[in-house]
Image (cartoon, rainbow over all chains, first blue to last red; front, side):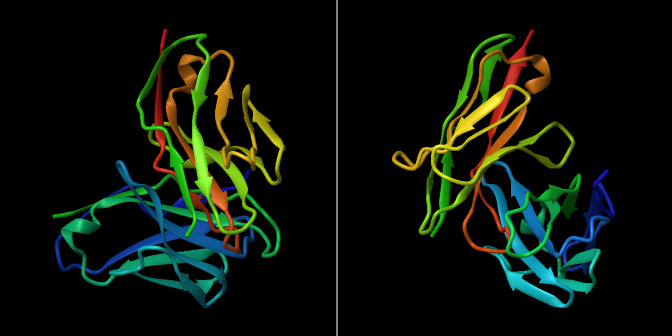
Length: 114
Length: 112
């Protein structure tokens, strides 16, 4: 059974803290994605990665960075968390480049920044 | 740029009613189209997809037809169940690497 796991379901952090959100997939997928989900705004792409150590900005990369040192793991980093980064964060992965493959999603991390 | 517009919710129906959730898109290329569903407390999962004009995607009694002339991909189900209560997202893929552009989501509430 395919699986995308995220390190935490709920997270509470203070303004200014450095925050790491971890995502792991067990499907040997090339592509991995980070989205944030907000009411009334749907899902918005923050960053994606199509290979180890490769990354591309999505639609809303400001205030975020990512790291992909291993194929199965994709981390989202908030260098200095702010209250407007309170949101649900969803990680996803998909298969080989050049093919149209569905994205498989993790359960999400609900982050609250106080 | 690409965009997806879907009807605002919540859509409230009684069990066994007919469901339509409208979705229209704008894309520069020839996108593939998807419907994803998010059940309470879970991540998104693919419901159905269509990759070319006039394709019909179907799954679990849900259907959607890729209409290029009207740039639409409306989701339908003939008889909804309480267990169909969820948020439904229309999406398109047009940018390579399977990146998706999502609509804002439509919440469906089905009562017994």
